[in-house]
Image (cartoon, rainbow, N blue to C red; front, side):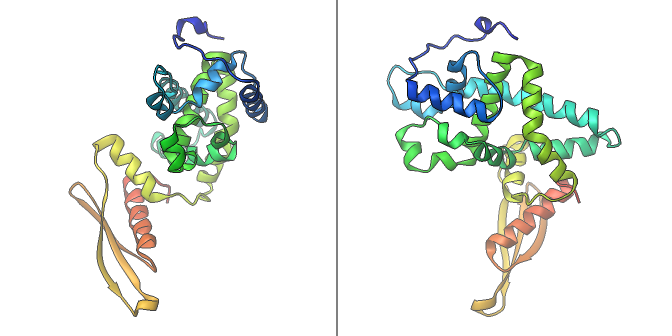
Length: 250
C-alpha cells in the first residue's frame, strides 16, 4: 500500500452517513474495500461541482490523470502476459479499444458509477450522468483512488475483472464499437483535430434512401460508405477508416 500522505493534499469535507453508505455499497459491488472512503468520494466529484461552489476546489481530475496511467499499465501487462502469440501491433490495437471512452463509459454504467457521481447543477440538468466522457473519466479516477488506497496489486486485480471480458469480446470480434467515437477520440488525442464527414450523395425515393458518406482525416479520405440513414453511413465510413488505421481488428 502506498503512503497516501505523500499524495493527498485536498481538504476533506464531512461525508454524510447516506453518502458513506452509498460509497460503501458501490465498493462492495466491486468486491473491494477502501480504508479511506474520502478517496473514493473524491473520485466521483466532477469539476462542475467545484466550479459552481465557492471555496470548493477539489475534483477528480488529478485522480483521473493517475488512474489513466495505472489502467494502461494494468491492461498492457495482462495483454503481454496472456496473449503471447500476438505481436505488438495487435496488442496495441486491442488495448486502444478496451481503454477507449466508448468501452470505459459502458463499464462505468454497468457498475453504477452514474448513481454515485457528484455533479454541478448545469451538468445535472444536461444529462451529465450519462455522458460518456464524464463516466469514463470517473472510472479512471476510481482506479487512481484505489491505487493510492490499496496499492498496485489490488488495483491490477480490479482492472482485470473489469477489462478481461472486454478483451475477450475484442478478440472474438463481438464488439459493436461506436466507430465514430473511437475515431474522434484517436484523432483528438494525436492530432488535436476532429474527423469531418461529407454526404456525397443520396439515391432512392424518400421512404427508401441510401446515403453515401465519406470521412476526411487531414489529407486522407475514407469511403464513401453506404447506409440507410446518414448516421448509419457515417458509422460505416468511420469503421472503414478505423480498420485502415489499425484501430479495429478485421
